[in-house]
Image 1 (cartoon, rainbow over the protein chains, first blue to last red):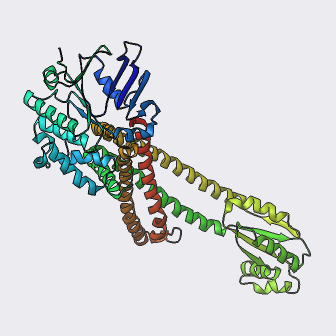
Image 2: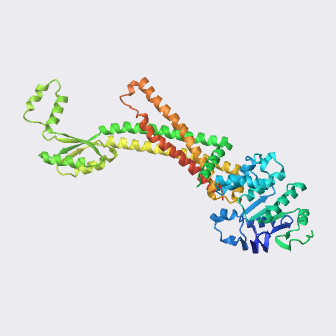
Image 3: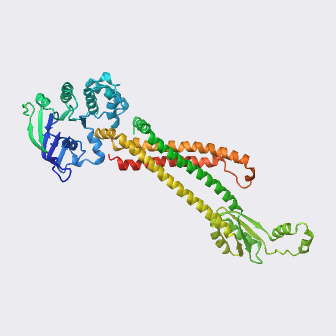
Length: 227
Length: 302
């Protein structure tokens, strides 16, 4: 599903943000990527979204080599990847329903389909009753649920979450993790970048550890993660 | 494009204007000023040209024939002149008609003095054509052409009148084109500024759109719509004001400055605005489109 072969990324003449990284993630996996600031986690997410081009090596997602995707085909490629951020990135002037529908509108989904799918995905993340609320009227945890609903409404095969619990208290962080696990059980490949080692330990999923742009450890699901 | 996407894009374009009220207002005001001035220039120029045309139509080239030229020869020359595109009208004045005109002017009150010439027309060789043109700037080439025709002795024309009118026409054209061009550049610049602010305000939304797989077109279209809407509003408003102004000015000048009526006749409002309205709107839409397109190419990398 996701394959990186000897991928390096250097921003300028300095130290590379990623250095000769090779890894493979199978369809349906749930993977954590952990590491300190500057370890290359965010660069990895940007490379997977084709926001950045690798300096060296190749990335394959859903059997598609990212280097072969033309600029005008990038939107179509990104529709297979849902993305969630630490700061939620919701549109503050639109209510919950409109925030989720926005993702469907942007890819040209017919209104009829939108009216069916948006309530369904809001119901899945437990926000069906709050569809008229605006972001400032709901809690951080609920805002992150809206962001997850928005990421899922176009039915992507992969969900990338960049520090999804970074702005949440531990209760809400757990709720979000449970939701991501449920999404994974439904067949979506989930890749979570996080600092929250308590959650990583408790979830007992595959953990890729990065330091200074290099993968230093890759523990399979079920192993007990050592901090 | 889906109908729903079309309406969505239109709504977003309108929302951009609303979110960005002050800059949008400034752009609409500048655009209005441009189109208003353009409208004023246009109205003045077309009216002036109509006056000039009137004057030009009275300027004639006179064609005289060689001594002993037959009527058939003169008719042939007349026929060839009539075929020229720049000729609007030609009048044949026979030797007899020329003498009659002469008598009317110079022997007024002493007609008996002219009777001595009854059998011997002193203007026997004065048969001529008076040729009127629809474009006086073509006078020189027309004169050269007529001079080359068989049977033509002399062509008389007023180079000074022709050149003055042509030069004045050209000057007015250049000055108005120059002023309008400067104004249009200002309008494009201001719309570009407004759209740049709009892009900055919606930067986060654009980033989200890009990440969820929106096409370049979907991201850019609302900004193009914004520019076009500013153009439409900014041109429709001054055109409405100009229409009312023009109507009232015609009536006012007609009532208060009667002495001008012989020299200056305003073109009817419908004649001026049947051209000015579509041109003004196209100009507004064009400037709006150009301003926003330039800006998104520069500031919106998708």
